[in-house]
Image (cartoon, rainbow, N blue to C red; front, side, top):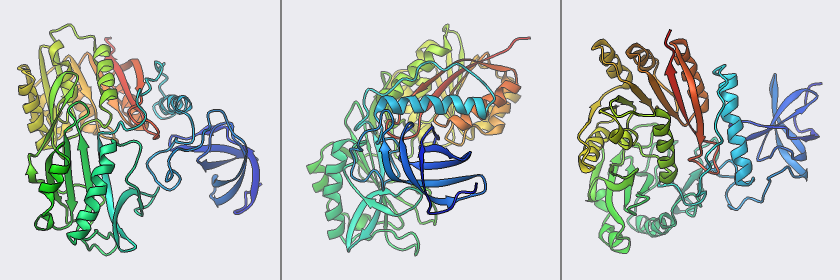
Length: 452
């Protein structure tokens, strides 16, 4: 039987995809239905039919599945940020555990036994970073979030994932920017000035950074910055990053300070951390500390190890372990982040760390040619996973242990499978939820070299 578009079917959701779509089967045909929960009995309308699967939308919910709740956000169904605001948190964690295990079973053809997922104690107001796209709607300057699978801005300043002070700052900023005749960037015509409003907050320190991401500089129009800082003394850094390119990349190549300094300070695992606009810093600080503690526990340092931290960002992971190793070497491609890492080590009086700026694969390859043999390598790559050159170079250095941290189960499983071909076996595996109410989850693996 071939499903027909616009037809109504009664069915039950039996599975969940990592993107957050419920899965049902109609006459053996897989149908993906957003904003559903496993166990939902419902009527769905088919909206798209492809060769091997189809997409549907809820027409009528007959019997709710276990864990289903009423969404507590007015823009949840329009915004593309949260995925699981229609189920309770324990159900969300159950789904995420399944996503992680499925990725390793299906993609990596590996079958590690994951420890129980570490849920986040805070599921609201936990994010320390937000980047709000700006638009003009009905003659007014607005900001908010992109609708799912689009660049259409949903105006909203009260996201419950963000600190409440972000809303207060935005409600001050938008009228001030409008009065200053700042125009919103328009992606289709590549016109206008202001692309994004970017806010960052130190979880422990409370310090706030504000960065205007623009197509052309607006600094001469911003005559309200002194008044803004008086209203919000927590803002100690105001910057502008000009990005004139036609691109989906948010930040420009450079950042200029408009007021205050070019960084904020926070504490991570007891270390003082400088965070610049372009530095990678985990968005859920409290959970990141638990993640790094788990990674350190997996490593079982004896105190005399050489630790290599690839994709090290501002050095937060490696520096959290520096007191347990002989020497720490960090590698990061973003110059500003490397500068922050060096400052962070000095500020925390860590003297056994050094940091190099460059591509992880290239520098790891040079280390391998120099016959550097780290005892432990930490890998915390971006969502796309490890560069293949980095994997080969790490394997050539033959570390006893590899600690892999990842926010993408699919690429983590792929990379772990590649390391298994070089003689590494997963010894421990854990999942830590740093992104409550979204579909994302962090993993940490301990892989050790099989000695033949």
